[in-house]
Length: 247
Image (tube, rainbow, N blue to C red; front, side):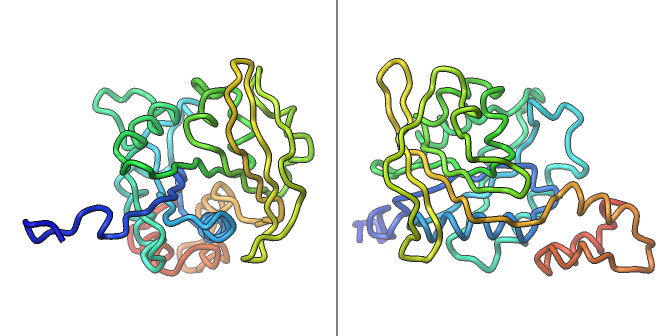
């Protein structure tokens, strides 16, 4: 304990292995929680930061709900899991400029305690677009990637999805972790000689899509409770009904 009576970062047991999990979360659903939970267990993370994004550069049409609503839904979705935390690291910029993951991760790294390991968690659908992201080839060296499989997204040829100039080599064969979750480990390299770990969670075939949930909610009659609500945490489903979202 410090002389001021406040616990230091070390005394509080600050997280040492943190994963940034960015996305629209429009709405956050059980699939998001499952992906974060699998990464948490497989890589023995201390914390997963759920970060709703303000403005995605590759989605100029924006989100169906405003940022404040997506933040509140995310807060409700993760409230029961102590290792999940809400992050505003990707909040809208004052001038409305797009949010770039490379810049967000850079700021986040500078704010985390010394010695903290930062990872970047994403679904296979997001990973398939990394080569088009701003400074996408540099992101894995800023925060090692954890990629979770998604139905319909082929990950058997990772090299074809990598940004130009990067290449992978297997590090350890496919094997279940102590948590019983399949995890593939690779080493990622670039032409400059930099290297970083790369992790793949290949067994998460979670058939949940935020876009399909939104569409089902739009098509549902007001007197009915669409089955898509069962794909959401109860608190999020209640918020959507109360706020009459996606109608």
